[in-house]
Length: 163
Image 1 (cartoon, rainbow, N blue to C red):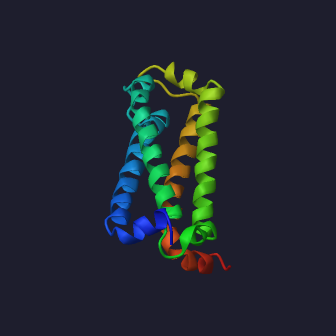
Image 2 (cartoon, rainbow, N blue to C red):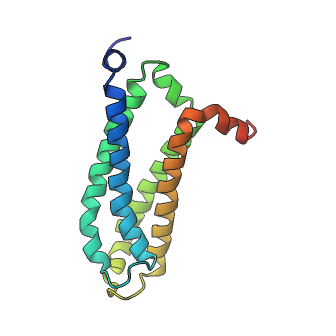
């Protein structure tokens, strides 16, 4: 063991602190982005979508926390090293879902869907394209959480999938 894995192995507090921060990061992400998503889906009419977008930077902070702690989990794994994660089906699915979520948010801003959603009246319905992006976003982030939980139970996941 050298480097980060040695640090994690010799400091018992690192892993649980990273777990807590990872949870807080996901709460920030889902709490802020999810708020915008559910408004675009028609919940909390009366609240302008544009006013909720001020919370999106909290989601960015959340994803940065999760990228940092996630890197520590993978690179600093004192038991099986990075290979334990990089060969874990649940982890690979989780990373794929995160990449798709990134493409989803990119499409939201690049294709003008965000501008159209922001123009929605406080009591109005968001455009269908915004609703699709919001529904996909929520599905992806809840799936990221699900498969993140499955990382510890990779053998159970493989069994359930018949692999």
